[in-house]
Length: 208
Image 1 (cartoon, rainbow, N blue to C red):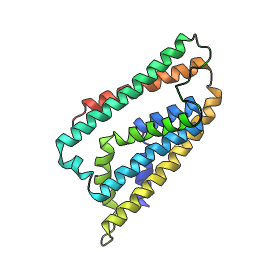
Image 2 (image 1 turned 30 degrees about the horizontal axis):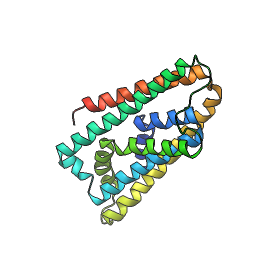
Image 3 (image 1 turned 45 degrees about the horizontal axis):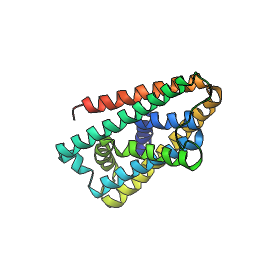
Image 4 (image 1 turned 90 degrees about the vertical axis):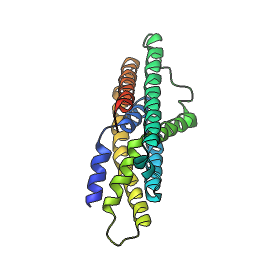
């Protein structure tokens, strides 16, 4: 119960993954938001498995490995944000008329792209690896098999994440019906772009 409560609070804390999932839900619908969420959780599960196998401990032990992944993650966030700002500018150039969707924003292309956005966002976050290797072991009962218990906790962490983000996707998808005007969507692109760029810059500027 203590682990579930802590994991839920962590899931509710806003971050890059929240921004990406909300953006995809607002601009491309609930299915795209759910795809981004699944991609993000695949990345979270990968960090959990890495923690169970001891691989993410390298991020704690190696300053170079951490810095390389941190700067790569910052670059990814800035790229996502810049792309969102560019899309907002394109829509503005259309005079606020018909919405210009990203290439492949319909059908499988949109879902696949949303999944990749979520996956890359989670995978490029070194703090997730450090968090997994420092947080999960605290809840392994004394005498329990460490590897098996860490894998169970990782799956439970992902399940709690999924439940929270499904609520987020549903709420944002509902708001999308009320905020579907091109001018509003363009403004949302601008806001999400600025937030993502800001998160990337902050990640790049942070010390370990």
